[in-house]
Length: 403
Image (tube, rainbow, N blue to C red):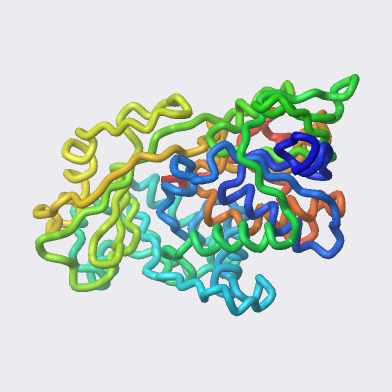
């Protein structure tokens, strides 16, 4: 550092606010783009990432969405994860990333829910996904441990669905980005200054008091996205909401792998090595403070475990091993990501509001934002359906497959 500054320079071509999974993805894809040679600064409040959404993720991957854009995003993600080392230039330091393909099992407890699953299956299959709709009899034949008295059908896919080691991507994106010259700074953005007329962010102020000029400003601040956007005079419908994870051991483990089962109760559960992992929202699912990670210890006993034990009778005898609560960056408009430029503050870019899908969507987001900055538009996959325009118009793009 020089001149008493905590940053190497007073001006950057790109400043990324938030250095967790999405911010690091943008940093790496931009640094790796041969057509971009500018300075990149990533500002992160907590470089330990102990309380960020990335640290609390369950590292899942699925093709089962109800919108074409989300399916295509996840198809790229699956290909990227399976060939991660190759995408990172064949760097032999990077381990191969293994994906556990036990699939998702969406269960429908009503005729309407079953019809929604059928419609989603048709869309997914038309795009090349391996999803199939299964009758209760077909589900029972493949997975005899379920109780299906109240189930009309389900969607299942064993191709590119399950979970993977997302931390490997996260670690190597940051490491390679640093090696490529990206600067990661422990700090907090507390204010922004716009040019006269408000068409661009001219500079930002750090908590240290330093001013940093920027060419592009990327909001990758997770559940704090609305706070960061407000500094530029932008209202963003993203808020932190609690999501619980429970890891438990079963007295009588199942004979085979348990797909990530999305129950009509709102609870989901899957295999997790020798144990099992379950999750759900709180009973009162509302916005919370950015720093509120207090657990409701009654949720396991009163909501999660009863639903799991009903669906899978073998889980009537289990032992809770671990639990934690993290935050979704919850888009209250439609639970879909908000990506790309603002319609008035033209150099303000969103990578926000993923509502639990951020980890698996991060490869496509990093690539897309890097393309926008480098070329003024998307080249690989058009992310325009997820743009801010729908927020401005109050025109939601609903995603039915949200858990």
